[in-house]
Image 1 (cartoon, one colour):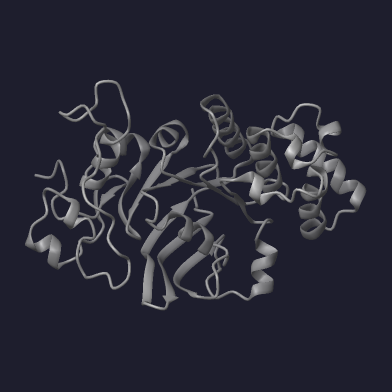
Image 2 (image 1 turned 60 degrees about the vertical axis):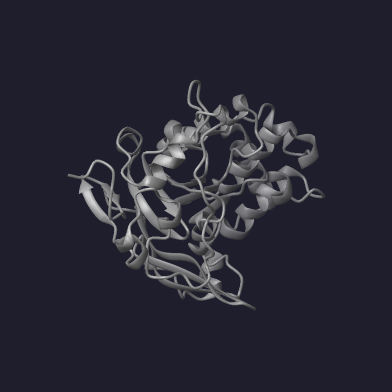
Length: 324
């Protein structure tokens, strides 16, 4: 299937008082219609910066190079008016904290209708009627009544559903969900994930899911992209990644997931030793070398390239687990 979104060698550098900081370094991936790609990694690894750079949402201090193609149209370097037409219409976002994303002084219906009026030129009445339909689509009970309510009258899970309805208002080609289940309880989280999976399949929307929760990944993702210190270290089909992870960082992430009987000798939860490296002035080396028990002089002197192992499974490591 032809990818709807193609990202090639995406690099994002921020200008700071202490010099340039490379937040994203040479990231590449594709997403097909109806597919869910999960981007995982620790906080600060570049997941959200990658997502924001897709449609030019980064601040002026950021310099973006590489290529981001949406249905063949290049977005890196596109004029701001062109990007404004794309945001919300073709590339939509669901952010992790809906209470800070929704305006507390406007009704839910007005905020959804605004998207429709700007991008599709609907009248106020048409947009409000469509807002009611969208709230029903994402499972909000009594949508005709609740469309006139304010964000504080909705629970956290309901507000997240409103954000999904707003993102889907213009039938986008790509939906970027940045930690959409953060701070939600397990039951609500499961409902939101079921909703995303169902809508992606039914509407043929490509979904880029940003998360650090590997339980969420196992539940919804078709493919996984593991990032560390701004670089892709491993990628592949979800089942392959869980059954036979090859990068030592991926194995560390999986080992750190709380599970019955999975604890260190002293009874503590497992963790990855060491600290994430400083992103300014990254050397030409494996960025995980200082935290990896298998690292040697080559790891600390030369950065490994992303090498395909089998099928869609690729890893960036000089000593991948399971190699001959």
